[in-house]
Image (cartoon, rainbow, N blue to C red; front, side):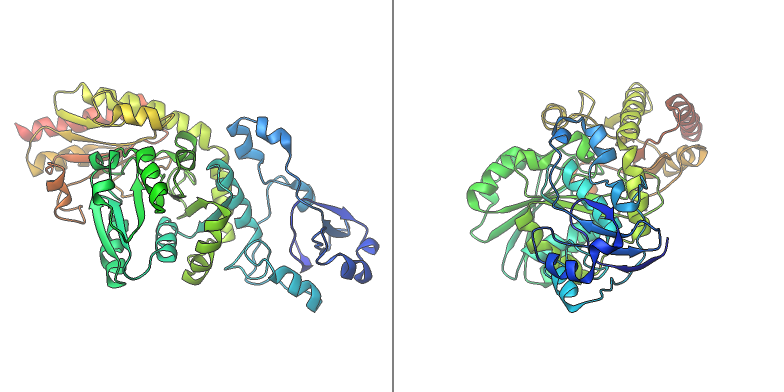
Length: 453
């Protein structure tokens, strides 16, 4: 595709003869309710003009699985192409001062400079906003970009931040290192405290950060109890929704202000990119987006395209992830070598009832504890596995096994706070046949038993 010049578009578009989009007509349209846009291309379809974006009321009746495929997609914008094009451009050029000034009135939604807006990335942002029942979305080059941007945008020197104790390790590190150096007071609370956080609030409490479930031992927080209290006090709430995905948990419907995702995991789904996503109200978007732009954690159009491709199969993948993970978790729970399985979908899990109330499904990440054993036995268990790779991430097509012993843990006291030891393993169940994975785990457990003899 070769495009000679571009001017930002807004809403739906259609192709018209080039004569219709004359300079005289353009000057009349720019700034009007039509929000004129032109693309002068070499396709022989003429110039492209935008009309107001009228919401299709039919979409409100669609199943979410259908919305994922079609929301925000406008093939007529792209000469009938069903996939949005990958727009490689650091900047977007214009022919007149009037056109340039028009698009600069809203640089976060129209192509002016890539760091502020990119059309390919914009489609992804529309989809995450739709999935989270939000008004706006922001995409980042990593999950940590999505996590740090709202914290930096909303917190100032002297503010008090409450964070769930089971939070993702790098998030904790950012709070302890960066935010405290900025003069922000950071304190942590347990999942049990989430039912009544009032005693932990201070006059300067500005924000409460949740991650439910957690991503190591999967503590469930009472989201609605936290948001009721926070809204009554004028306190912002953020939740990391990476584990449940927007399919299985809708935090904004429970009163949360901002949802963040490591889209690297399930949303992208193929372990081939890093991605952060954020969804919120339009008012909060206006507070957070300028900070996001200045941080420079910008998603590339290529990664946005891959994420859009992954998103299309998210419902299918999550259904298989859930089915396989529950089958394997139940199998592990029946094994004499295993003393505990930490999966929110098992009735034996401490937060099982709360998880059922807040979520409509489960993902594929969970942990389990082997019986007390030696380091050699634990190593034999992992090293014997053939289908499970050792890796830090999760949510991809491949199965992973992570030994959560002292050699891998980033913070020395988190295990003690949870009463855990070196016999903890976290597994991400991929899209392989679950019976093959069970057979692989059986080989690993046999090696563990042999090493214990």
